[in-house]
Amino acid sequence: MNSTLGMAILGFLARAPLTGYEISRSVAGALRFFWHASHSQIYPELARLEAAGLVLVEHIPQQGKPDQKRYTPTQAGLEALAAWLVGPLEPAKRRSEVAVRAYCSAFAAPAAAAALFAGQAGGHTERLAQFDAYRLHLEQLPGNPVADTSTPEFADYAVVLRGIALEQAQAQWSEWMAARLRPADPAQD
Amino acid sequence: MNSTLGMAILGFLARAPLTGYEISRSVAGALRFFWHASHSQIYPELARLEAAGLVLVEHIPQQGKPDQKRYTPTQAGLEALAAWLVGPLEPAKRRSEVAVRAYCSAFAAPAAAAALFAGQAGGHTERLAQFDAYRLHLEQLPGNPVADTSTPEFADYAVVLRGIALEQAQAQWSEWMAARLRPADPAQD
DNA sequence: AAGGGCATGTAACACGTTACATGATTAG
DNA sequence: CTAATCATGTAACGTGTTACATGCCCTT
Image (cartoon, rainbow over all chains, first blue to last red; front, side, top):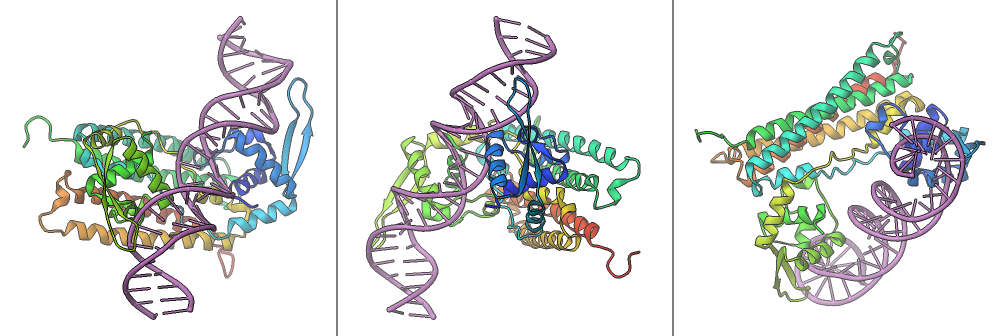
């Protein structure tokens, strides 16, 4: 009934009423890097939320296209969200393919494995740069909204900082791994 | 055909022949923190691997219990593993419930939210300590096998270091988050 | 006597992705 | 003319978890 997906959607809608299409297009800011769902999941979930009385729909007629259905959380929805937010959070089963590959790295050609992890490092560094640009943008907003934990900008900021921390950690580890696997190429010592 | 699960299992078996039960019991070392599958998934997958000629089965009769079926990778299996290991690795869709909660933190009671993230920080710190103990253990092994990338100890070491980096990052971020959300309790400022 | 561990397997369910389906408008 | 975007929805499929099923041995 109160699935993670439903609550995540409620969280989106609590910031601003949206249509299913907009949600699936990841209109929402910083979180788009940490959450995603396809429309085929979102539409039925919105219907469930509505049936549960957690959101209200506003039908906006359009020509040529199906009606837009813009959803807004009800009071009950906001309460359910607030309760879920501070509810129990099990420690997220990490299942990492990268870890598996590292674990088996001895069974691959060292040079190819090194290249793989170097590539990973590159990807993480790239995303790190994106997050960092976002961070700077948020920090330089007029009125310094990130200082106030009740602003949406603070929430964006928090998510971005988390992304930075994680990408940094992974970039550094991948770099280390690539360096260790890279064979001492020309003459072996 | 060569699913991630199958390759992960092959990776386990490449280190040492195991039964399905042993795999599901997470006999394998450091990776158990980063990978898991239930027996109901493992048994059919082992059957598929066998059908594909990537593993061999040895039936070990037992009294009272069903035969043990101990699996060993074939040459083809090892080759498939090696190919998979350095194959393309898409950037792992991160879908983090913690990020969602941070993103919506403004809609929860600040004190409760602070407690949530403090709890998360505690969990990460705890796991960090576990990984660190493991790290120390590996570093102090006689003969310093972690220096040689072809040893299983190095693979364990790599996985553990990755865990350390990630737990550290998350612990620090959670701590920061909790501190920011914690209301300036007694007198405001 | 009951519960847990060993040891395998199947079935039912939940969640997520990809593909199917419709249909008008707009850009190349 | 073709493809993409808007806008919703359903169906099929793959993967993963939980529960069902069997049956012996050992510990409490």
